[in-house]
Image (tube, rainbow, N blue to C red; front, side):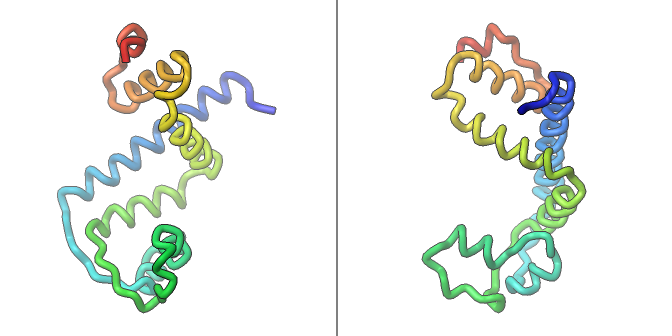
Length: 139
């Protein structure tokens, strides 16, 4: 089980690239706040790679009455376009690695020093401001 060290390094770089591209989608859309009203059905047509009704039922489990006619306000339609295009064009293994890393990173403060240092070093790679491991140890 597992992958070779070089392969793991390449895969981590791919997850970092993916996270940077997600951030770019947001940054590029944040200057263009456009509030658009769409039904869930319109969202399914416009962004077909996302199972919108199922997704919204997971987020709002008490709202079981949501139907495809339900109108939603979409504040960043460009972000949705960019994000869905990115997800559709990214290898599923990269997306799975990204999701796994996000789960680990969210728990890093409860893990050992080595794990916390990995989180800080990765954040430095993403931000373009490498964090010295001595600085990471202080956090």
